[in-house]
Image 1 (cartoon, protein in one colour):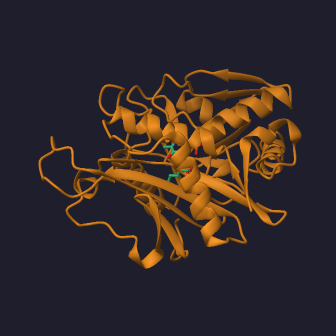
Image 2: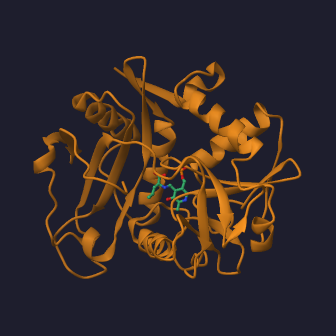
Image 3: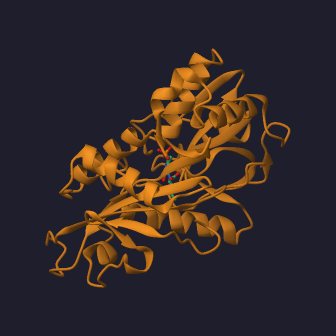
Amino acid sequence: MSKGVIQANYVWLNGKLVEWENAKVHVLAQGIHYGIGVFEGIRGYYDNDCIKIFRLEDHMKRFLKSAKIIHLEIPYTLDALINAVIEVVKANNFKTDIYIRPVAFRGPGSIGVRAKNPVEVAVIAFEFGKYLKPTGVKCKISSWRKPPADSLPVYAKIAAMYLLYHLAAVEANNCGFDEAILLDSEGYVAEGSGENIFIVKDGVLITPPTYGAILEGITRDTIMKIATEILGMKVVERRIKREELYTADEAFFTGTAAEITPIVEVDNRIIGDGQIGKVTSQLMELYQKIVRGKIEKYGRWITEVK
Ligand code: PY5
């Protein structure tokens, strides 16, 4: 997403496959003007001559929930959306790891903010590598805050929210950091510009709660399950103070694009010994096995596309 030009052969647009060049939107689309849209980010891993899509159903369920929250009536069922993803992945005949981006937004029609223009839906899939440095990122606490729960629906993965993340990420990069960490409106640690956050303290895994100002990440859920079920760790969901982040034994981000990314520095404070922590590296290794279907217990999370 961050580097290079993305391209593939086909895009699924409003019910059918179209060639990449023809996957177009009208400039009057309300989604462009007001950010009225929702999206998902899903990864597919190329393994054993097929693409293994990770937690496809969970992502598409969240897509429909996000849409419902912002009044976006998606004219497809959950099954039809899942099939659309499979169809576009198959059509592109990928031979590498991929990223899948379902998106729905209001198209052209009227100009007013109260207008409910017809909804357009697309699924874009393309070859994709790492999103953040897997060797560890240096972060800056952003001057941009997460809005309170009565300002924008933080639970929904809505397009408009990503202006905030863009501002935070660009600010961090301009100051020489790799990624931003946003605090909530009360000053507690919320999440990265496209990732949830965890810290390790005295062998306990701690992450901000879902009733806080965070997106309920699917990778976050995966990591909480792996940590308790495989590593036998205690996982606590509670508010995290900025000082606790600075003094954590380990810290890392989770996200579909970021997978598990170690955080090695925050606001010029080195986290732990500045290297990838022990728990972080164990989770990174387990995650890579699980997404490629190498751990049977979690096989239910994988959809194979041949
Ligand atoms: N928080 C925010 C703000 C996110 O955008 C994302 C996902 C997450 C947390 C993690 O959620 P999940 O684990 O369900 O992916 N971000 C997108 C992704 O595909 C990328 C946005 C640029 O990872």
